[in-house]
Image (cartoon, rainbow, N blue to C red):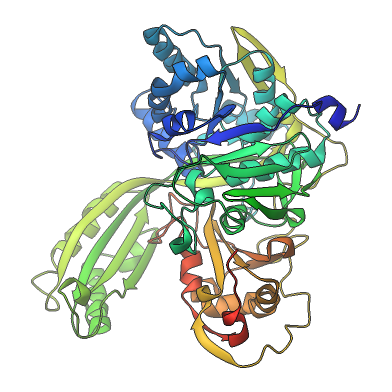
Length: 608
């Protein structure tokens, strides 16, 4: 039976997002339910860092481990959703989806409601790690190849696909609570259920993955964090996105009328580039080819995603491990006025001389002088720079006591104007991504007290590994280190301007790696960009990347390049000592760099 025959004449499924992270806007669920017709309400509460946060919560209180803000949102909208037939799908279950479902049932009981609540589990592999190792799964780090060794793992969660969600909906669930599923699975599952897709409807599934990736981060698809933010109306309070997913997997990204924000080819392009690697975007259900995505403006705040091709999923499933890394303290020694570099050098020398063993006393040290001072400063604050010192060590006494005591001695015995900001000491976790055979991860779906298993999608001999095909010193298959073309045609005279006057960018974290996607808004500008922004050029513009492996990918359908900087964030967000530990500002940093741009391109009307 063909896909069209299975889907029949079913209308596109309107899937609305109401959360992009744990702590997102609490009123968003109510706004999406009351703002207009929707069929499914979804929300993404989980990130790699969130799993560690939930683990710490659970250590303090075994009854927690899920995103409690989701329960608060459902108190606002559960009755309306049941009345209107709106299904709710959320990964807010985190490390304790059954406990989250019980909290939702308590809400329902208080309100006199009777929803059918389903739970999707099977992602928690922590109890199975020893067995997996005994079966030959080495749990080596996905990017570095380093063995896990005897590290004390706190969490180990596989990224599940959407078929468990589809099963729960097919069995009558009104609310589906999951553990760690992929962000896109929150759209793939409802769309596959609604349209009756088969497990090998690769193109349709890939289209749903693209739609899910666009709306997963909430208002980022409607103008939030958009490079050309001045074009976005109502950005003070942007609405959240909706994906209208059709039977063939194509979709229209939109928002409720009257809600703030903007849905344009540009905002959708930016989100497609967010936290990806190469064009083959691997999910447990399908590998979506992002180099086949086509975007078109269908009307005001309506962008169509079409043409997405799919391939079988990889034979491996990604699993996110977290372990306790040790203790970290950051101290800020403020430097004001003249001779900033000399003052900072003096303070650092005095600091290490006060500590037995100096820098070598700690397992890891990071020192950065953040120059925010201005010449002829208009205010006291504008004269200040920050000497930021971060130390890490398994021994809490070293980082909390030794460093703090040494720093405390400085203010009256060093350079003029020295003062300190309060030290921050905390436990930190380390993110450790691994791959396991896909067949090792089986979903368990409980609906109305009846549990059954949903097997993973495994295609013998098909797909490709979920991780890089080469080590961090070289590019994986499909990556390009330099542009394929011979360079742009002569565009005439140039002008030195910030790169961002011509192109947009969006950046983020992928474990210890950072990505920065860069896109142009005209074909001419893209030809110039593809030839100009090579790996070597990126390293010149961003000196932090000079000694790190950088992978470059071309996405011509999106007029975009994507760069993955391997290891920029060290051991992951929770462990990174960078001021911007999630690389959210990396794209805007790149756009601020001044380069020679053809004047003819600057004169183009490049707005979408």
